[in-house]
Length: 522
View 1 (cartoon, rainbow, N blue to C red):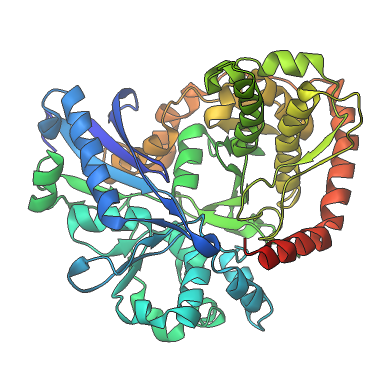
View 2: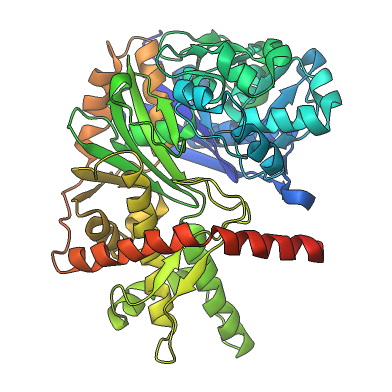
């Protein structure tokens, strides 16, 4: 590594934004550039993204970073990448896309998930992967393709994820990482593919489509000449394939700092709730839900539950207010409305209404899987106003987080919080009281990009191991603990009892509403 190489670039290819972030070798963020990514929603629950456009946008983000940092190419010691999880990115002859990517938002595989969940090997599949089957995953999506569009798989040479596709374009190497490989097709204990899992999905004859598994803390590949020309970086720069974005974000935000019982929640468009444990401490629930996702630390995994929609619920409530104001000729931006949340919270009574935050059209996947699940508001009377609804929506996110942590064991002793909503004092207070645990916020701005950059830092020898890197990149950025409000804790205990009782009673209603939508052609 030349003496002038003092930066590591982390790429975080999200569903709607691709970010390129430069860090120095001690973890300080130096600059960032981003490009809006695009995806399309279609009939039957389709959610697709163009592979070529995604690669072009990645290159544009890297070139944009080069415009912010002088001599970026020569200063880059390594490049690392992570990206949106799940989904299916098919590559055929000449490394050309077979079709548009099916994203994690795609719900078309719902009938196949229902069929596979009743199969004789599904529990064995869950015991190996630690992961409940849902419509988001490559395994269920490929099984659905096999049942409905086998010609797509016939044309495929490699089934990749988003970050794997970008890695292929950067290096020419078809590969995936241990995290996505093991929670989809493998075993989290040995981080290899598992034949029983592949058989349970009905994909044994498609086994050859699964790429090599590599660990980006140990293996890098050089940036190709063609990719160098498109990105403005230097050919031969080491490229590290990071793990899936959920655990890269958690790694950057403090899911593992050596403190027993700590956990990390990312509250963004979706809610991701995870704790780091050794593989022998994993709690596999009877319902067969959640994820077990490997960390880039030997024998350490994250046990994860993800609720499909988190701040999307807040966006929906704010859009209601904005639409009504617009009808009256008053214009309010999203930022204006966000600024009113604390005022609305102060005007409302805690625990007065019950909201289940299943606002996504794809239903719910954590801590239960039901593609027909929908949001609901319970307990309204004529005295309630918008402030009460806004509080209920935010409290619903706290209840969803508690529901998720309940499915993977005891409540955390401390919660590290990241994502856009971490900046909200109102949400932090709700989460602290709902879980009855102190909350800390990481000051790390781009945790996902930092997580994969940390892997590259270990790979090039800047640190002897990941724990040493965490001690310098992550731990010092954790803020002071915010204690739960003792008056709110019993209120939310009672609310949670009703929250769980209501959501376990609702599936027949959701199914009936889904049948009505289908009858109307929606």
